[in-house]
Length: 123
Image (cartoon, rainbow, N blue to C red; front, side, top):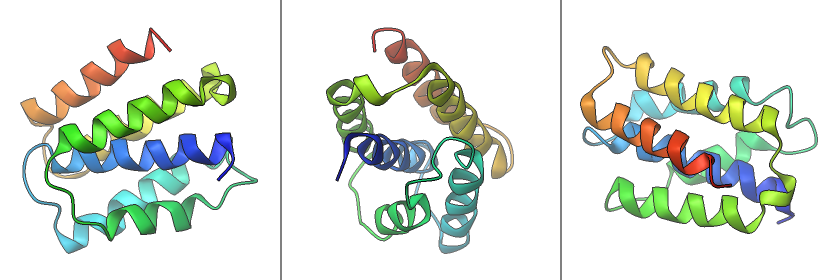
């Protein structure tokens, strides 16, 4: 997988982390998460099959959000030379939209997004 694709894979992991932060990701939520990530990254991912990446991630069973989050952040640091300012804005927007997609934003979801915004400053 090339560097830019790894960043979108990392975004998928982050999307999963936000969705699972307040509990289990339900089957109907998986479709919504998939759609939000694909639509939210369309402007900067024309050469990447984000749909397939997100589908693959959402089929996995993860234990907790910190595991997904930590892996994603490591990938973003590893491939930071491909990470643009516009992508950073898009990634935060996507995570925020996922948090708002399922009723109200929980404290746990907000904490994951806030942590990501803070961590992005060092990337």
